[in-house]
Amino acid sequence: MADDLNDDDFDSNSPSSTNSSTASEMATLQHPPFQKLVPPLNFCPVEDQLYRSGQPTPINFPFIADLRLKAVIWLELEEPSEAFASFTRANAIQIYHLGIESGADVENDEVDADASIRSSGRHPRSTNPWDQLPESRIVRALDIIAHKDNYPLLVCGGMGRHRTGTVIGCLRRVQKWNLASVSEEYRRFAGSRKRVLIELHIEAFDTNSVHIDQQVAPPFLLY
Image (tube, helix red, strand yellow):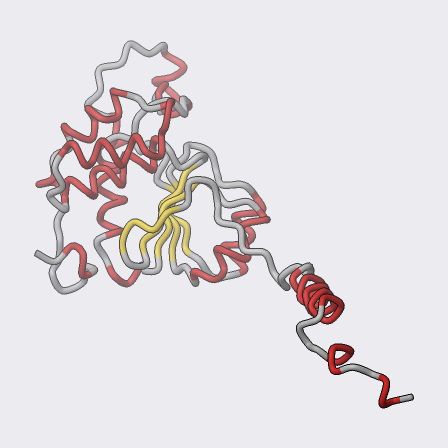
């Protein structure tokens, strides 16, 4: 009886054998990965160990954890979400909250404010998320970026578009990028919501206000 069997019955290339093998491979590929790594909105490397993004949410935390961040520059007026703040505390990540204007930022501004605003010491612009970052806040952010002890470092804001784009655009100015390239990078992340005033703000930024210490600066700022 065994002699009646043909070699074709044992052919590994036969349709039944191939289908079985393919089915086994497909079954293996259908298993999800152990951990999903989802980057935050508008995430992108800027330079080695320097990143930009919108505010990370819990689904992004495994991805952010893999970056092994040492510091975060937070550029919004409001505090970061409690979930993100808790994540940074749990992972010993320093948050620099630079979205709030200090008194020094506005002391020379000519504002026709009412008595209650003047007595409270608050500037009307400090509650408007549409306002641009004052130059002193940009300089502070760049001072942090210019110190290699803060790396790996994430620069982020709500959507990672305008305030984040302002700081990165001014960094590019310090790096002596031409204005066309600076604007192109800003528009790539801002998309249809680009703001001409922000591009003008970046163009007018005084790069001489940023001091680069060659002893502590990251390699991309050494020139």
